[in-house]
Image (cartoon, rainbow, N blue to C red; front, top):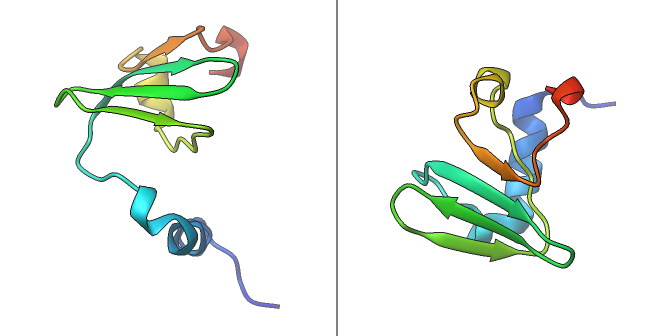
Length: 77
């Protein structure tokens, strides 16, 4: 069985969604609706999607560097 690491996990996901992955987009707000997620970036970009995979570091979440609507549960951060 091959060894699975975070790096290999994300590379495998990236293969499937290569055209939808955004780099150099600093996220400032994530709004979760009933049928879509809206991501607002500091460069003015607005990205709409059905789903979102976030890999934000815990420090970013704890210091509220990104606004979530609705707010993330405090006991999960």
